[in-house]
Length: 293
Image 1: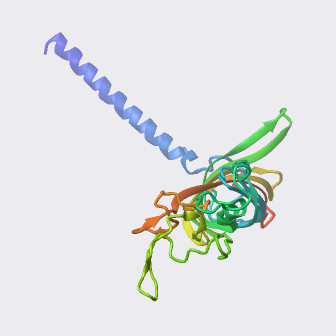
Image 2: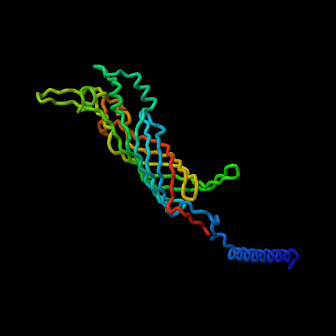
């Protein structure tokens, strides 16, 4: 055997020996290392896991076109784990004019004028709808949690969550069927009279019923933060989006000269997002908190 061959054999034997030793060491470390099965954070407070959350809350719309919706309600949520929970929310509300509504009113006549398609002030207000009650049923996901430090002395636990589910709302409008207001019983349609004559549509949407009241069901999305003031009380800040079919103005949106809600003949409803900001005080039950090992 040549010297070169002997050197190659020696290096190969050394390499095999080294691999065997390293493999045995890694296997030994794998057998002795128990961190894979250990808690990520020892003695961590389980602030939401297997707890029931009751949250009195205040909520206000932040993108309304004609009427701000402001109200109070309750959120009920059960946390299946640190990350997942299910819940419902219900809010009873009152309505306040937006600045756009006040600006429009300033340009309208006190009473509707004959032959004009411009509504009077009260006629305009009667077509606008309000949202006396709304809410959602949802699944919540909480991927992040941690601590906030203030001036290196005060520490507060927090978590961020996201929600998705079904939204529901009760809408209401009150347009009286008196002469010249909402008295068109056949908007956009010709009417055959008893004597055989035909009355064509008046092509004036100002006296059409707004058709924007009743129950709506749609989609719900939300996101927020818990800031824990104690082991069982947290400040709850949330942005919520209730999306459903609506015509807030009760007016002729698609410019076909009448107000309708038939998808085939002409629908003035649109799938709209109703965005709210909410603040609440969450109370966790049981009030005692568990800790990880």
